[in-house]
Image 1 (cartoon, helix red, strand yellow):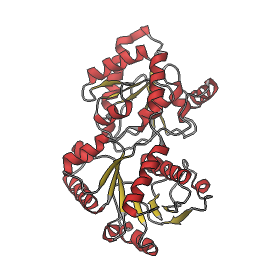
Image 2: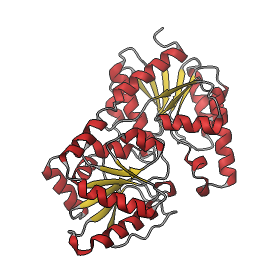
Image 3: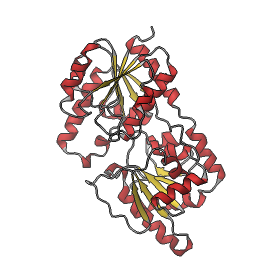
Image 4: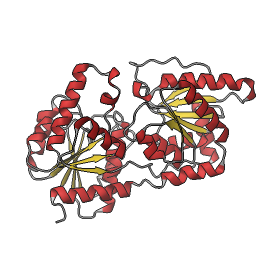
Length: 373
C-alpha cells in the first residue's frame, strides 16, 4: 500500500499538482495490484484535475484532509490521520514533509523539485533560507529514496548538501497527451477569446523573480525596436498566474492574458510562432516541453535543467544578458517557420513519458517498501 500526498492537486499548485496527478494516473494504469491512498483537500479549488474519474478505480481511496499543504497544523494532523496505516509507504511530492511524518518508521520517499531559494537567494530572507535548509536536511536524513525531475536538480542537491543518503532517482515530468499541434479552428477560437493578434511569441508561467520577466520585457522591446516597421507588429503574450507582489510594467507589444485553461493551452501554444522561456533557474521546465510537443520552436535560458529538457532542439541564451537574449530571440524568430526545426522539437518531446516515470517510481516503491516482493 502507498500513501500519496495529493493535497497539491489543485489550482494553487499547478506544477506540483500536475506531477502528482499524472504520476497517480500512470501508476494506476501501469500496476493492477497497487493500492493507493490519496490525501486531498476538497475545499481547495481544482479546475484542472479530475480526481473523481481516477477514484472510479477500486484500488484508489480518497482520504480528505482539511489542512492544505504548508499549513502549520499539518505537522500534527496529517500524521494523526495516517496512524491507521502504520506500515504503508508514504510519498510526499515536495520538500515540506509534515514534521510528524519524519518520526514514523515506515518507508518515506520524497520528490524534490528544485533549490531556487538557494540558487537565487535575493527574494528570500536569511531566516527563510535557514528554515529551508534545515527542513531539507531533515528530509534528506529520513527519506529512503529521493525523486528528482532532472539530473540538474540532483547535482544541485549534491552541491548544497553533499552526498545523498537515500536512493536518488531521476523521474522527469512529461507533456500531457493533449499537447499536440491543434487544428487551425481551435487556434483561432483561442485567439479570438483572448484578443490575440498574430504573429506572437509566447511565455507561459508566473511572474515570480526567478522567471526573469523584467529582462525578457526589455529584450522584447529591443527586438521590436530593431524590427521597426519591417514586421507585422509582433506581440509577446504572457500567459499564467500573476503574483501582485512582483508588479511589472508591460509596454507596447506585450499582452498579459492571465490564466488559460488546460483545454485551451495546447491551441495557445500551437498558434505561437516562437516560445520564449527566460528563467534564471529551473528544476525542470515543463512549459518548454509542452511547447515542443505542440511543434513550436523554443528560445530559452542556457541553464542546466533546460539544456537537459530541450537538448539540441532549442536555441539558448544567457538569461542574465538582455542583449544576448534579444539577439537570440530575433534569430529564433527568423528561423521559427522551418519545418525541420519544428519536427525536431516534437521528436524531443516524445522522449519524455509519464508511463516511464511511473515505471521507475514503482521500482523504487518495491525496493524501499517491499511492495510486490
